[in-house]
Length: 247
Image (cartoon, rainbow, N blue to C red; front, side):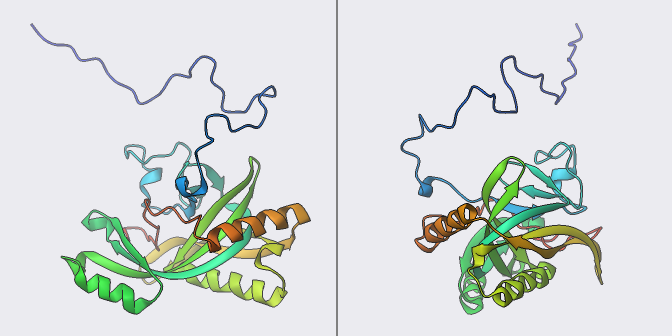
């Protein structure tokens, strides 16, 4: 007797009584989360989808519906922000990250304040050739989205370091607290000797309200106290030209 297998589909039927939007009757609250503190949460990263990002491949477990190259997205929630997003920078931190290369399985192996410390850790791993030390500029920010204000981090490496330094220069020239002005990050097409990829351009858009300034000041205090940090689970997208896969 021949066994018949039913074709399975990845499409999930909508659930009765479930909505993507918060209903008007539901007010803000925190019941059930009284014991959740800042140490129990992570700040998601905003990253830029490249041609070979797994999130744009429909057969990959990391696939995000609607994802395509040149789109900024949230590495924790999978939320897509489009080709640009507005934000308020809150704090800058430079570090050197030891990563296992994506081709070797990927993985975070530590963040260090100096390149010398990162190189020492690199030499100590079992297979140094499968790992890489990357200079990373962490920009802790408040995203200004249609869904509201969201705390997040831009992790900028490799060619994105130019955008990072441009942002730092504009902030220093303004001669006000880092979280006193808002900026826009936009995806732009770029080329290198390795091929084409997507990069980020930063432009200023104006001063923030006092309310938003206070939110930035509050997040700044949490980061300085070590009570908020960046998500380390998802690999950072480097320059990803067609035909290559970095990190």
